[in-house]
Image (cartoon, rainbow, N blue to C red; front, side, top):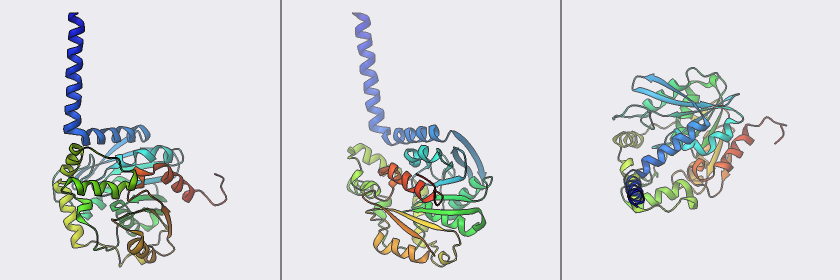
Length: 300
């Protein structure tokens, strides 16, 4: 009886501790799980030094190099659901951009040049003929890399990509301050596939968005670092992959204008997948990427 009572007591304590951790650190636990899943798919972990500190890179698979570049406030772990399928066909490289994930700097300021320099450092030892798949800010940074190193980039896959000027970006969709705004952001990211989240989880997401590094990057975005004038000079073939609906960078207005500025760019829609299909529609995204990269005449 004493042993049974003792075990029951341990169980109560364990469940209470688990509930406490979930209620106070749910976002951290989710990020840890994403990171663990990514490292399972891309087990090679390397660290590179930059002027602003360390940049972390995760790699796996064999063949031509496919680089995954995440968006604002995200991390390499955001590609966890699609990385394994892509690594069956390519050498896949995912980077924690500076100020995101495990990468430095740990304090502001954080600017676009810092982010772009971090990607350059993480790819310096990679072979040429890179394919870059970038989501949102990641697409913006990928285009900048291609403009700076056109001979090193074989192709761009721009997933709901930033880069062109767009004054209608709603700050609340990037840096929400209330639960309702956070719910709206979740819906923007994943459309109707966004799961309902309890209030404590929403609060932790809001707190994470208060990271001063993200705040400083947003301030620079407002001041403008757009590529409009350079886009017609982009020599690299580009495909635009667009989850819909996307209230951040909508097809009507923004994507159409970006496509017009990119010579020969094609547009492929992922319906009902929102701004970040790597979360909401990973299978559909993976299939589309593989289809676009499949050599002409190759089988399924």
